[in-house]
Amino acid sequence: MAAAAAIAVLFGISEAPPAFLVSAAAAIFAGGLIWVATRRHIQRSTIADVSAFVFLAWLFTPLFAIPAIGQLAPDLDFTGQMFESYSAFTTTGAVLMDSAAAGPALVLWRCTLGFLGGFATLLFAAGLLAAFDQSGPRMQKSVLLTHDPDNVFSNFALAARRVFALYSAFTFLCFVILTLSGTEAFDALCLALSSMSTSGYSPRPGALDAYVPDFGLIVVTLACLAGALNIAYLRNLFSRNERKYDPDLGGMAILIVAVFALFMIASGFEGSVVASLAESVFAVTTSGFHASDNTGFSPLAAIFAALVGGAAASTAGGLKISRLVLLWNQTFAELARLADPSSVISLQFRGGDTGNAALVALWSTILAFIATMAIGMLALAVLGAPLDHAWTAAAAALSNTGPLYQRFGLNFLWADFGLYSRIVLMTLMVLGRLEVLAGAAAIIALVRRH
Image (cartoon, rainbow, N blue to C red; front, side, top):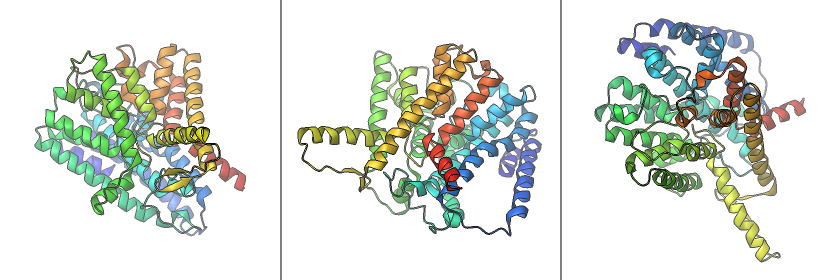
């Protein structure tokens, strides 16, 4: 937050530093109280303790951003300020006012929160939640996670440094290349922050090609793709020069090609090929940027692609492509068993066998994800939203792909939702970041332990 204030000074945004520093002071004060209260309290922490930490982090951290939003957007009521804060920190990218109405200070704040939320997503996934996955399908398997079995947080600080170094390096590289491509420095900074975090915040309303050169559009597309890949895969690729096949990358490539084909069919093969491909990447990576008006785009195909999402241990939302890859492999394994019932077929994923318990967890997660979206849709409909708006908003919030909602039509606006509907949407955003069942199962394990 303090760094964002310094950046605002460099860009001459005078109203930003006081607002940013108020939120920074609130976070420092609360953190100081917690540190004073717990610094002499030594307790071993287990995997079950991770659930409480991650859940509380997603639940309470966005509250510290509200003071800045309140100063920068005084016309928003408190629930509107909460909505903007939770949307930004969960990298959902849903906005109550467009970039022009928000002003550069609030735009920079949104992008900064998106960057921080992306970092938190990677850190929790690769540094903590991967501990739950050691005996399962290992979708979040990570070289970044090494810890004492009796203290899951023993390596948390080291994981934070590793993740931040890689994540911030990619973001800075994106900013530099965008600036060199001819994009204005402020626009390049905001796009770099929101591309790697896949939050989808645009510094200006409308399509990217209106103010970003063609090469810059390619850079944003590649940055979103990098953000949607497993952070451990990126680390191995660039620090260890390992180029092994990754099922997440293969599954995402197939999904991007499929969505791109649908977009081209929707345009009658008259849309820009580059822009249509960029739009398909933005949908699959759950960033939801608007690449161009001269493109083939099918909102329904885009929202279904976002529900699938990117790789595990990435900044992307959605169900995660790993689960669909596992489901696909299981389908062929079951067909093989039907052809030869006496055969013994093991389901392989990331070089290991996937047992029955992992498959049960897979199906449970998928069903819980669908059920959560259905419950969210029904809640929004009961609160007065038309059924098509309720379904689209619930899907966009749960997959953390806010910009896609407004691509469905001129009357699809987040600002139209009332107080209770916004609470439902914020709940879906947080559940989307917790991956629904993973968070619920961890909390249940914590309760049962006591």
